[in-house]
Length: 348
Image 1 (cartoon, rainbow, N blue to C red):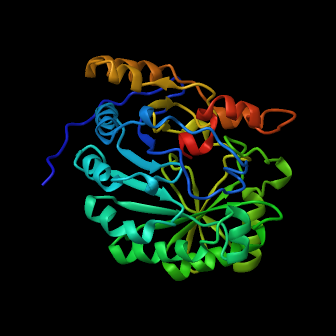
Image 2 (cartoon, one colour):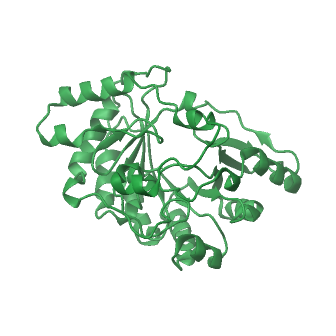
């Protein structure tokens, strides 16, 4: 039985945001090539020798947990590509300070991994699913694997996961005609659907504002279909705004593009090679791998993290919204020069 942990200190940044949630990328590789994330033909991958070992990742998470991080989400790339991921889950789940341990996956490998992840102590699963049409899935991802994703959702629930969510990036002219279908699918599967506005980060090199379907537009469509849609009161730190239909069905919308939530963002991101980013839009991160491998003490690493967070003033989504002319965040050439700027490297 896990012992109750001593309360962690609460470190806050310059906008009074607590250090609380961590996206831990375990690999930059992915087995899909989604249009909004990895649309190019070639990518520069992180050198394998620079990827954190399971023990290194776990030790850094332990330090973050002592500093207030209580929520961990495993991401990629596609995290299930990482060999022995269940072993890392077990390491992190043992820490009594971690109250919420989740994963975001494209679902292709979930059917064969779900039970091991559940048994290792994973709490929640989110599956990315942008369409219910197999032919559209193939066009979006360049892989004919739609059935595997659906099988993965079924397997996760069969393994024992009670909290399964479905994330759907909505793009105008691509899948914006499936809002109702996706919501109905989630209702049938007892899985909460979260619609995500198309964001101009990382590998979204084909992004344009014209392709963004706003939260307001989504709510208008769903109101016409279901009647009055009510907002659900929240603590204000979750990335998704929750709403409820007249029959009680709850869904979420992540509106980072048109309605940024920078002022209540408590999330940071640790890449697979140990670079710590304080904002999804950040152009530069803090290298934690180098001092870790050079033998830095726990106190030295702690000091580096505390200094980084307490000096944080990032509000990338707000700054992007304020631009008069808004194009893609990083060019293809820029991404090739620094793979850390990729969405699939730092994790969404």
